[in-house]
Amino acid sequence: PLPRIRGDIAFHHVVFEYEAGRPALKGINLNVKAGQSIALVGHTGSGKSTIINLISRFYDIKSGSITIDGYDIRDVTLESLRSQISIVLQDTFIFSGTIRDNIRFGRLNATDEEVEAAAQAVHAHTFIEKLPKGYDTEVEERGSVLSMGQRQLLSFARALLADPRILILDEATASIDTETELRIQEALKVLLQGRTSFIVAHRLSTIRHADHIVVLDHGEIREEGSHDEL
Ligand code: ATP
Ligand code: MG
Image (cartoon, rainbow, N blue to C red; front, side):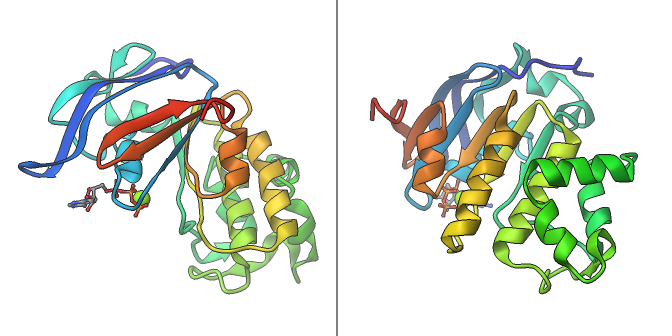
């Protein structure tokens, strides 16, 4: 098992292919210090989702290695690896149940107070309180009661409650109004605090706030640096 980690992540010349002979990543080197946020940008098919999928070891790489705090992720149990990672996907996973249950999915033994504190911290509390039954409002899997922005905030509350060392975020591309956008940016700041994060970033504001930006192109890093450097 992996001990409670700091969250340093490194890719050492990682080559990966979904199909033999067609590398999706062609020798990726990355060195991310604990607590840093990395924005991954690049055209469709450039390898952004592939990079974040490999951190949780959803696939095995062809050559090279990925380490967390210096431990090769192939040498630790999947359970201990994944227990340190929270993933917030573009199409946020909402299941049928109450809002409270959906947030608590981040940590099943959390108290009601902890659930609400997490929602407060990411500014989701305000909209939840306005729902017919507040935290006890039932939502559907497709989340029709909730807007895209609200679904995103709910998933942030869930991830915050889970309190992982590593956060992976595939940012939604859906257009949202300016006010929600601002709220999401604020929430993101809270969520990223003190964790190593990989963000597949679509919004300029997100890219600007990242500590380090990696530009991918056909499975290779074309450019990297801070927002000011690029
Ligand atoms: P997008 O912006 O569209 O999400 P991306 O940068 O996330 O793109 P990836 O999904 O990482 O791109 O894909 C990288 C390459 O791997 C592409 O050529 C893609 O076609 C291929 N690929 C991705 N997933 C699979 C899969 N499950 N099986 C086979 N090939 C795949
Ligand atoms: Mg993708």
